[in-house]
Length: 186
Length: 293
Image (cartoon, rainbow over all chains, first blue to last red; front, side):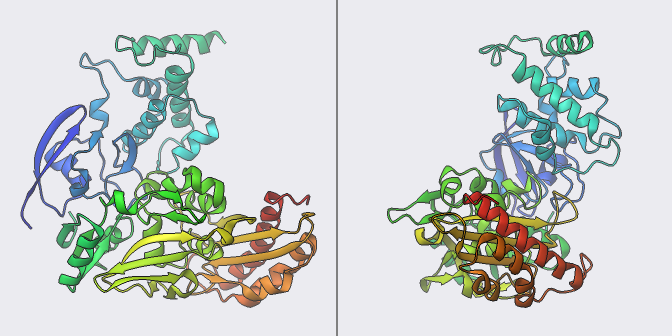
């Protein structure tokens, strides 16, 4: 089949890239756009390692043809860190809660956590468990992952005053530290 | 990279029908969660795909029509059905069923129409759509026809839809849902990312005093080669008190069904599930209808 050109937004930047119509979005993101946070796992929609945000929705890219990504807004873990290297609150919370072991499944899980953070609301642990039920992790036993997601969601959507959430100059790492200290004080 | 021979992105349903008619090898792909997996496995190697993925205007959404019919666009994600206010108000049990396939990421790719067309007996929405008496509209270059879901399934993974027909609507008539409450019960070894070992949907319409089962529809997935209604059980408990119906329904349902041995579960275990899940689903459906039991 002839190559086609994908025009989409990747991590906030407009991109154009040639692709073979037989490719999954996973193939294109990893092999052509070098987004190696997107992991090739089961490739049949069972492990979640290839999850990215497509128009804000956490989606398995292994079962998503690149052809369907025309014009979409795609976010991967590569798009989360601030230019100065500051970690996103979800990333920081995963570090703080020791939610990472081998790390293979984590980039996907972080994107589902981002979906929750971006919703602007908080979640019960049961809701978090359900929202993470599309992932298989062989190392962590999930508990620290759930702790990390809960912390990030609470810090961003629970403890931040209304109106501040969209502010661009919020020091997220400071927020996370403040949250941690508050926890320790408790 | 998938083993795909061609991929055509349809611009409209009519365009898809034309493409399917022009290429005798072409098949429809919507969400991709069945078709692409089969391509990966080699079962559909060299597939010629006509994609209806982007036809959201024509094929996506849930709406209430003038006469009270619930219309569900076939490429609506499972998650889209679960969270639709119209569906929640009219066909809550279908919303529950749509919340069970795979995991969250799969439920924003997999479509309810794909679940119907793939025609697996284990499809999570199959027993519920069967209980609700859904009407399925399919279109090809030869025209449109409507198939009641009771006549849809012909065997494991097969249905009356022709290769070149596109499912264009799933309709649930008002009389099929108004006054009914229900419960979908999925049994699997895990609570997520699991194919149903047994699926059971029970819908009931209670008497005014909420004590009797005026009418009932009981449907199963994985209890036979295709999704089926347990009509003998329905006839056997209609008119009984909820408690008596719950007492009797399990054994009657076992007589209506013919589950198989598979690596997931033995026939004996499935028969046990049929008995127990019928009873529990009936009780839960009745509770939702206001029965004090």
